[in-house]
Length: 271
Ligand SMILES: O=c1ccn([C@@H]2O[C@H](COP(=O)(O)O)[C@@H](O)[C@H]2O)c(=O)[nH]1
Image 1 (cartoon, rainbow, N blue to C red):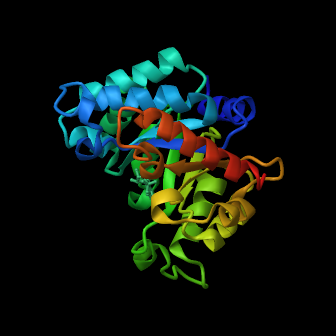
Image 2 (image 1 turned 135 degrees about the horizontal axis):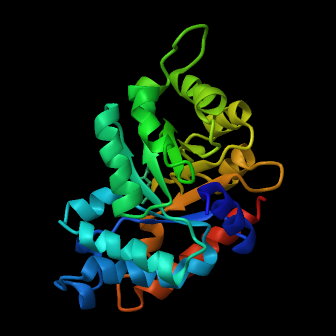
């Protein structure tokens, strides 16, 4: 199924704009999982199964798996999501960016090896660096636009001519010139609601992946006001650490569920 079709269906069926981020840090795992060779997979499966009915997507961050030599557990995790929760799209947060020949390998890694439904990509090497991902027309490609970190302003706020800022140029290019297959989205941080509003203005109903609530302190009400579309969707609002590490005991998954439920409901209060 096309990523956008799956995402729209998940927004409706799950009544949720919440994306749970899977950033597994073994140092923060509960004691009963410490030292197990499959700890990352087991931890993440617990979170996924406890929250699947509350989310529109899951977003594993590849660095947390690669740093632990656990790409095999990432493969198994995505397989688990597809098998147990087949209607929930998986966004691989990899933020890749390279020349076309190498980008082809990254695209194959994301979509063929890991079987992700969408990937985050860094667009700052230009259109030819993004094209290999676009060949997978049914997959989502979510391009960095206005990132959630304070240093994002160093470059993304530069005036690229006529008062237009770099992140605005990215949003305009992506919405008007690069989106021939209708499978593109943008990353805009919840920590910058004014920029979410600007990107929404420039891109119509394009889906926005919005990290930055929870551990980074972004405001849900301001995010929703700035970014929701007329039908009350259009956003995948990500929270990772605040949900993953809501509890630290054997009941960590139930604690994660409680925070995911509160977060989903706080988002829905502004739809
Ligand atoms: O601009 C960006 C782009 C991506 N991220 C990623 O989202 C999560 C946020 O985790 P929290 O624990 O909810 O802060 C993480 O995987 C980042 O790599 C981002 O934060 N900002």
